[in-house]
Length: 486
Image (cartoon, rainbow, N blue to C red; front, top):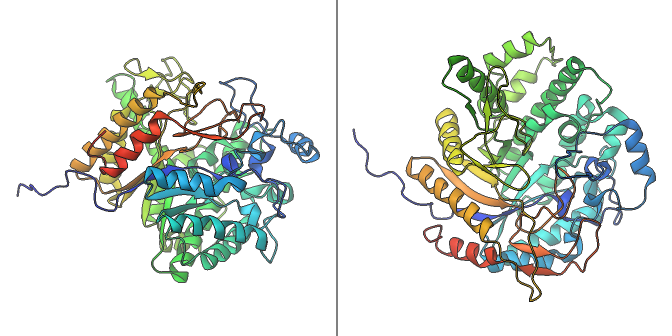
């Protein structure tokens, strides 16, 4: 039967907003009993193409712990949201935000990760943030772990390689679920959980001295422990408050075959499966057969406890959230030129433009991803990161003319709208990062994403004054019209 009642626009209550992470905005790294996190021992890059977030060794951690400054570690200072959250949230409200995606810094609540009692000063800070958001009817969307686990868990037990970390994590999640049960409805367990396949940033485990085979074994074992921790947290959260909506979060790595050659098509299909494997586990509640084959062929032998499969099956998520910045190309023999981007190291697509950081811009790829994920899972989808990093210029009059960002976002939101017309159940869109912040990949400030300009340079100099960019007013109108006018 032909259906004519498919949705033609974003639903009522669509969660328009913006997104940040504690380690990139908060600052206040050494006050109120907060502990060091894994993000705060990653040195800033020397150039724009150097990705430092996984180049961590036992020696570099010792050097970072001994360094009591933020000079080499910009994520320690962020943009001082810790002291400016009221002003920043007021600006979000002025834009009309319905949702603000943020993370709780685990080390603010449990400074070493494994204490038996939480740090009240940390809990109280997030109480103040959630109360401020509630004042403006902005829904917090809270990531429980966003590349910022307590560093002490790395030093003591190599992060997620140890099964002990599951216990520490679920103690933390129980505390925050109970504390904020009436203040937060939407939760995400692990940010871009597939980052664990790249190393330290995702696993909190130092593996720089290992062979490639040993790294693969370590990383998938750490990821298995994260799957268990995520599933336990979902079950725990639903018990504490059945109204909680708890989702997974994936760095979506849409890829296309370089040519119609079937071997390229198959290579792209395999890469796509390796990306969607994570949501397969968290939505369907089991390891897919193709992944069992992959692990076997790569001699990865996961250590599991007898109840692990049952835990994963019981703790499936309510929705899928994901980041989308770019797409890539795959060939069977790696024949194309390489591209760089949000953990993507595939091949360049000759049909796409690139940003000044080399990220390929592909709005249509967002529609493709939305449709593929909807058809595969049939659970609600939530775009919680999408944005353009650029070197914005602050003019003498305090203005920032970022038409390029407006164009980028308009093109992506247009494709979101098309996906909704296709029948995709889309919950919301929180653009990354709604206020300028420290880059995750290079720890630089000059790679700016926000609607709000923050006066700070790569060395931490500046007044921290906030300025509205042209995109601020544009996004305000988008939200006010529920995406009908752009």
